[in-house]
Length: 315
Length: 201
Image (tube, rainbow over all chains, first blue to last red; front, side, top):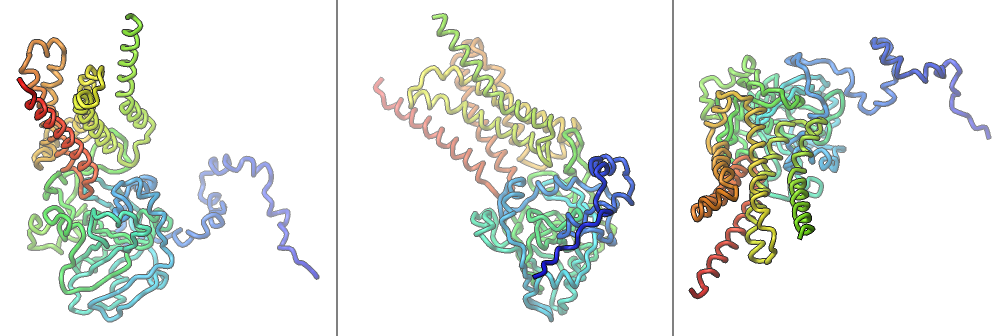
């Protein structure tokens, strides 16, 4: 029996020993794109290929991004723990594939959808947005995903759909934070339909040129840049179109502190601390705080959504 | 005699070293950029928590002495109290220097948002006179009034814990543990007083 070998490596494919020994120097010295392009990234990052060379979407800002390490190791993920660094490790227990999203309520195309099918129908784009937490810290993140509007409109919401409700996975076996009652589980967030359909609203499946890390909300998380971070719900398994305003988790927990709208607003303080400034992650000890902007700086795009609304009352 | 004295001062030095360890570790971590994504917050909250821990330890000395009859620890009460003040001072310094950047406007902005900062400041204002009158000579000079004044440390513990309660968003576990511990110490004191009153004159 003839056993065929794999195609042998021809001599011209073998890297010259001298070149190999100096590979680091060469790459460093070259610093030019054509040479870096030859470096076999593809073989190393075959899996996350999907998240490389993503086109920049509209509304993406030309801002210096926060170091990825800071973003990956400082997350509020109460489903695992209330500690912002321990969540990185604990969240790895989550199984993010296969993943399904249930669409319910006031829409034509309700039902159970595979995440892959949703991803296939929505081409990826990158958006660099500011992210401001209600705890007065912030960061700048290059999210990868698709506009929420594009995803939602495919389910054909009807005219009774005034609100959209999002629900996080409930799985206390792996999400060990759900065994304690710090919040009402599962975590629920919501948007008014016009907020959800605003082109700034984003559904993210990746960041920093790779698949979304589990602690940052894999496989599917919301990003609403003009609202406080707790609106940007993680690990979404259910989306419901409804006629009435959803009961959201933080609002249930402390209605006088966390409103349904939760728009970033330096003029409306949290009852216990000021919202006028924010600590930008990734800075040093002596980096001063940054002044918080109304609607987190997205006022020109979203302020009209709240015309004639008393923002102090509807916080 | 001399040997005993030597050992006594040796243990005191060791106690100082132990009390300073958290501070040294924090400084080293800050120097090596190992305080995580939000270094100022890490410094600030860690120093604050150590101040509260030392406050609790200070309050533990007397019950420990009376109930478990461990003698010789009473001289450490002042040391622990002063370290509570030290960590509280560092905690406040981080707030003033790194959080509000020595700006009155920023300070007032935070201050006017209600009780959270106020409880912190009140705690510090209580600790100030206690620290100032902590010396032996002051203790002798003030006599009875010294004891009365230093009962304020319980108030400081209460305001410190309220300060902690107002910081957290929904996970009250840690402040609840501190509060429970302080209540436990309170009940010890109460019991001691009852026992004392029962004794025939």
